[in-house]
Length: 208
Image 1: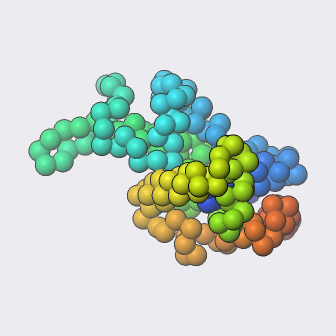
Image 2: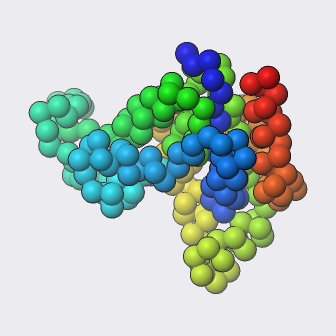
């Protein structure tokens, strides 16, 4: 159990969750862990960054043969057959261990990776889910990835579907559901700075 405060940010794709995490980390002068968790997990698992990124927040490859062969691999038995734990699960477990380790180390902000669930035993964890209206999300993704409106919306639906399946498989809770988080904030209504202001205020009040 940690005495310092950490923040977990779940988010719809295109809602601005990563930007919110970045701005909040700058204001609070605490480290942000998002895509860098992929690099850290890849390093500890001794796999390529590309392989880790491919299965990050995705069930892709869970039942494929993209496996790590090592005497320490987990072995699971099903229907009389033996198969090694998939790369997806190994990356999830490694990221979860890293999140817990980093949370014990000091104040931090975590984006995605089921961090709200992974840190569920931490009484000083503030967790939030950020969403935004379809139009705002499309505009953001069009700009970030240089896509037209149709392709941006297709990408949003694909990434959200993947994140939802990943979160619900690992947590047993509804991704983006009101019962899964302490609060759900509308970035379209509040604006990116408004969400950052709210979380900064909650954080500072909690640490006294």
